Length: 368
Ligand code: OSB
Ligand code: MG
Image 1 (cartoon, rainbow, N blue to C red):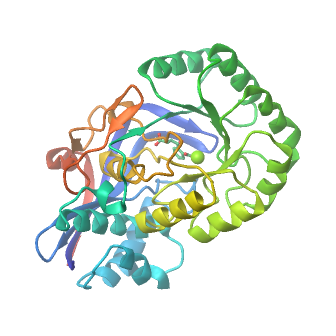
Image 2 (image 1 turned 60 degrees about the vertical axis):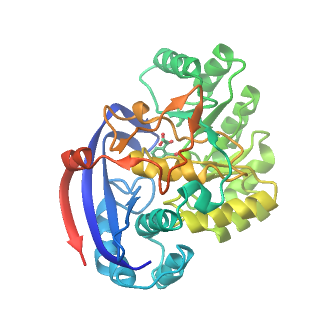
């Protein structure tokens, strides 16, 4: 493989419903798409999961564009590549900026899968032909609104319900959900909204038999999480704190996390995601695939990754129709009864709907 041509597009897609976390509300999703063309004409697609504002982590759409244009694209253009694993080596001179790196790496994996005549899932070593999925629900105006939403998603068959929490929207919310949905797999995601001083409050969650609590403490912490885990029965799952295999190893060794949420962009790409998966499999740490409100392209990458065997717990990769009136792939990602069928065709397994892509594009630049 040799990438000779790259196009970056800035897309804006309106979410069907606003999505509120402890750090802010999303109404529109703005993100970068990267289209890479290889010397033989094969086209691969990657999606940056960086948001408009540095709330979830420090990267943004603009910092990603800057990193791609000024550093990453020059490193990759016209380089002879034998395997997508080489991309992270080529980028190793650049610190962090994992979401920017992952944008190119994902497109290279797509090209590699096509040129080796297999699905992205198969190229990664995945075996499942369907994956189990859950759904992530933002903070609502009232508990009644939340209960109604959860009821709908449980009836749609989603395998696990994740609810965003923050101080003041936590204990009563989870208590009510457990009462109303006694048999449903439920978990909470705090997106770093608490401190170790809140241990007594967080311990109250143990009464509700939650599958896990995701990232209760600071976004860069693994020390306090280890302290907290000693006092909680509910397993902690780290999201924001894990950027690499090394982070995962340290967090597992410290006892900071019993489960890991793997997000491809946060860890710098599919190769690193796979390494974290393999390490966790060897150490009996279940993993699941997180979401960043992706368009169909990022979603397709998530579906492929989730086919690896240690993705034991349902992920956040819901169907396209949970987010968009119209997605940018054909067919869209469909979740039926909490399962997504893994496409068996070559590459990411979905056609990119170029007309839809153009209709959501607000800026575009070519590099060669
Ligand atoms: O922490 O997992 C998170 C959305 C935006 C930012 C961070 C997170 C989320 C989600 C939604 O939980 C996952 C999804 O449906 O894509
Ligand atoms: Mg999270």
